[in-house]
Length: 273
Image 1 (cartoon, rainbow, N blue to C red):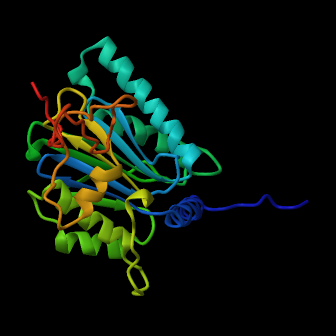
Image 2: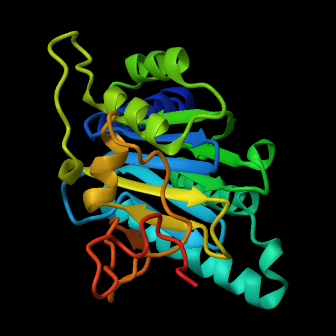
C-alpha cells in the first residue's frame, strides 16, 4: 500500500508564493506616483488591453500579471463601488474599502485554490489635497500596503524603486512626474543602454483633483508628447475635456479654432465662456 503524498503547509505556501512572483516578474512594470494635482499612472503597454482603469469618481485601479485574472477583479470592483454608492452614499465608496474587498478575494484564492492569482494591484484615491491622497498596493496573497508617494509593480522592481526613491519628491508637476516614471520604465535592469519609450508605447492616466466630479482621465496623443517633452511649456493636463466628439475620458490636447483666426480658441483646454 502506497503512502499518501504529503507536503507541509509551509512548503505549500512557499511554492505558491514563488510561482506567483515569477509570473508577475515576467510582465512589464507599472508606476503609480503622486504629483501636485493628484495621482499619475504610467505603464509600458502598447496593446489595447488596459492595465489602468477607472473604478469610481475619485478611485482608479492599476494591475500587472495575468490579464484575465485582474480584469475579473476590476469588474468586481466596479460592481462593488456602484452598489455601495447606490445603497448608501457616493462618499462611502473609498479606496480603503475596495482594497479590503480585494484583499479578501486574493487571500482566499491564495490559501484555498491550487493555483494563486499571478497579479499585483494598486488601488488609488485622490483626496482634497496631497495629504489625503491614498495609494494601496495588494499582492497575490492578499497582503495590503499603504504606499506613500509612489509604487512600482512588475518587472525589475528593485532597481525601479531605487530610481523613484532618488528622484521623486512631493509637489512635482504632471510633466515632471511622467518624465520620472518613463525614465524608470525605460531603464535596463542589467545596466545596459536605456531604452527610448515613445508616447504610443505608453498607457498613461491621472486622477486630477481639480477636475469636476469624475477625476479620472487618460492622456494620449499630442498632449502626452508635450508633457514628456522637457522643452514644452505644457506641464499639466487641462481641467476640462477636449472639444471633440467621442470618448471624453481621454485627453489628447486637440484644439478648436475660432472662425476667421489662426489661433486656437481654447489653448489651455478651458471653457471659452
